[in-house]
Figure 1 (cartoon, rainbow over the protein chains, first blue to last red):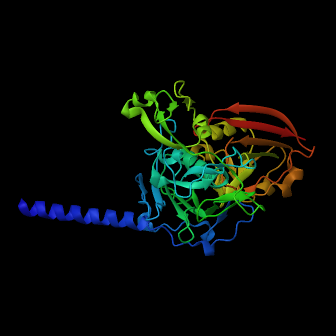
Figure 2: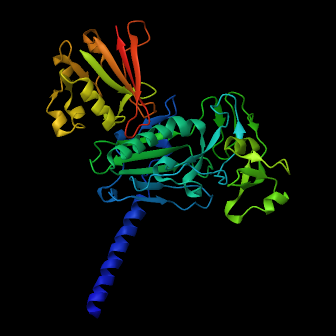
Figure 3: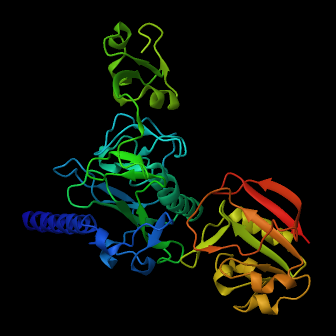
Length: 289
Length: 137
């Protein structure tokens, strides 16, 4: 009996080691460098490796999972990977992500940007795929262009495929930084449908973290209008507010109304007033923040 | 021939030789619409239909050459422009989404040669709203 228990434990340990090993492999991500990517030339994404993802056979798994790298020493996001299936897809509306401030974040507006704000808190694995809200290991400083033109089309394609077929899609997004830059130059996106062996979904692309008409210092996230040569965007004032996520009111931190908020409904937000209003919040009538 | 295509908001058809999207409700709609006529498509396109549905489909990888007057052709990953003279009518299904694309619809619907004769919306399984547009010469 004791012998059986020991061999059972050994088997479990072996399986755990294999599982951790597989997860560790998949989280290394492909070794693609910015030098191997062509300069941005007007297309939001470009095929890499002939559109063949770098997953090994062992990494392709038909059971849903999601993994997010720990932040590095500079606080930057790393590789994210999931086997996206119907089990992971969200069933609720997206929540507030304004509490996360990814590396290189600036709240800055330009008239030439759709929606004005240059930067979005850009999900590496899109909300519609795994339902992750304010996960700091899944949000990078990304331009509006990266978010909407570069990444969203792939997220739409994968989400609709999974919803239609109930199959799984191996999905990995790797932000690629130049040295110690705080803002990624772009993201490598890989997708591969599992049950039909890539017949439905198969891509490997690099999406550029650029914004036409705006130049970016990727070391810091500072930006300026193309051709102007210095910081020229209108930097919105970054202020800390206390949010009531239930009543959707925002307060000055010194407001007595903020003290009365139930802990479960209270959130600290640092950013612009406009951003909060855009998210559906209204200012408290007492402290008028 | 009557050409059927599915397009995203940027007139994309496919990416990396894979269709941008699919929807079982659209396939049902298409089978109903083409009932009583020949429906041609490639082997790749036929793969998304059930075995029973495939019994009524004419499959050939040179279907655009083989289709005759009054026949329907379902085009997912082929250029249509070389066959434009053969096209009597066009049925465009719009996904009302943006997907990645590297093959785009190659007929100009705005140059005055084609006129939109009908527009209808219907719900899909994985698409909230699919729009069917019918163009005639």
